[in-house]
Length: 114
Length: 112
Image 1 (tube, helix red, strand yellow):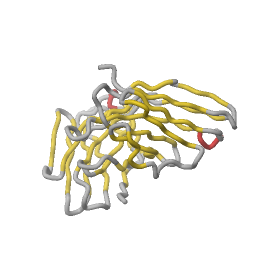
Image 2 (image 1 turned 120 degrees about the horizontal axis):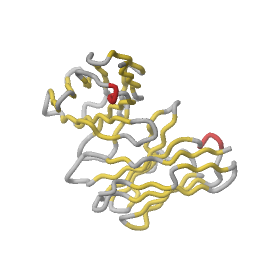
Image 3 (image 1 turned 180 degrees about the vertical axis):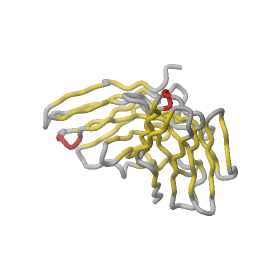
Image 4 (image 1 turned 45 degrees about the vertical axis):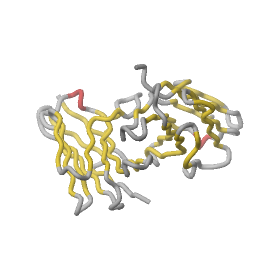
């Protein structure tokens, strides 16, 4: 299994631009999570989906952030417009809910907003 | 909600010595406690987990203990090796739910 796949691995953009991060969960997994990691705040859960349906987005910092999961094998996290304080590493994780508690993380996308 | 505290934030040990990382949690409903290892430039990887019906679990050089009464759990690494150097995160959650609450991480350095 290829594991959780994220793209791009690195993104550098200018303030005000739209950023889209992509995630492909492990095949067969039915829960997907988006996390943000910073030195100051550690690992923060932004949003998670069960069976492609957003369950809890209370961690999404602002309306500038949005996430979608159009099908079981793809999810996006969009920031529009981006700001320098959005600079962080964004992780996607997936899980087979109901059979396993373990969340498997992708390699992350390092976002730098200038 | 759940609050997970982790100590120490940094830890240096000599190769071959043991390392212990401690976490506390606040929500008595939490019953699942995974530990993740994060190497530079990579995502966190699960190394061991424990459920609240078990007090201790061991996997080769790694062990985790859980004290439900005191609401704390610990990671023990014995005979440390340089490749154990990484950031370690504890987490707590309810296994029927979906959300884990992560500690702030411990940067472990094993000195050869």
